[in-house]
Image (cartoon, rainbow, N blue to C red; front, side, top):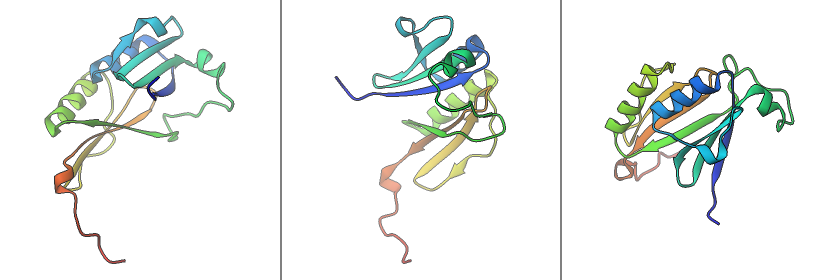
Length: 139
């Protein structure tokens, strides 16, 4: 079996969150979805499980963080062009996401940030490795 990544997120409104992640380009896998959780597919090996707070608490070993006011993790999605980044962001903002800061341009990488309704933070970026600095500064 291939190695896979499953990110589990607690959300307050399952349908609203599913619509948001669909707008970002995720697809739903109904085989692993029910009224308490939705499996959202980014690629053949990367999945985001969005779960009601009640469902999430059944697997959690600690109290849930208030992700609207506290950062619980940063999740990153790479795309093939800055246009794809901008399109994903436009769709996510239209679906109710929040962009908490401006685009960051590192020369070899452009990055934008979007938060979902529950404050889960996603860094969306395009990286052109051919523009990565070959010489590191002396330090």
